[in-house]
Length: 130
Length: 130
DNA sequence: TTAGTTGCAAAAGGTTTGCCGTTTT
DNA sequence: AAAACGGCAAACCTTTTGCAACTAA
Image 1 (cartoon, rainbow over the protein chains, first blue to last red):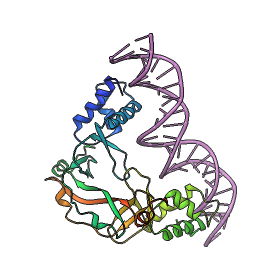
Image 2: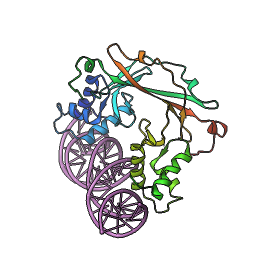
Image 3: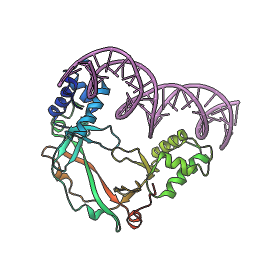
Image 4: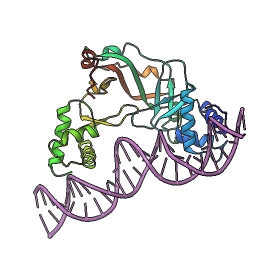
């Protein structure tokens, strides 16, 4: 990516504004407000570019499509609300996970995903904000 | 599923014998030894049946295709070797993960995945057994 | 001008489904 | 014979790619 196109800006802006990991189609929906004829292919191409630039990272939950969020400096994990299906960042991390592995296995990395109900959905158990 | 067919048996046996989560195409490869003309569609249909029967469970790692393993009674997590890509069961689990969530969020469940190098690959850093 | 980008449509890759012939009871 | 099951191919869904037209620098 060498040019700053309207599409690129709109896609980046959408991710910045969301402040949580978004699905490709959510990025399209949000960025379409600024660029009406925006295509999914362009969204994917720019997401790829943004990743290569280190501006965003991919968040993949088991069995779900990839989500994209602003790159963060710190190691962190995620929480998914089972009601609205939105994903949120977590800051804490319980170290010493190495001891969960059997003898002879070397742990290099880990991933933790919590599932439950977010604060909004706890307050309003009816509505869905997916 | 009401009948015990050769295909059903071969698929179930493959999963039992593996003792670790298998990809659909791995199940096909293994069960094909017993049923030569076995098709992937049949594998998927029987995997679905086995799940409905509660005989097997699905293990999904972020960004990867689903794997299938014998249903286990106990809550457990998984370890994936980055060299051979095989997935192994872990028995331990570090509770008190609830406190990782922000105030107002309710944690109902969690998932932990460790990545690293399995014992076989530590012993033999060259060969891949994927 | 002109190389990089976009939109559209088609392709890919894994999983699911429709159809119809085959098997089991 | 009736009901269930398997194989094959097409359908699906999300992501990727080919290509001609467009556009930013």
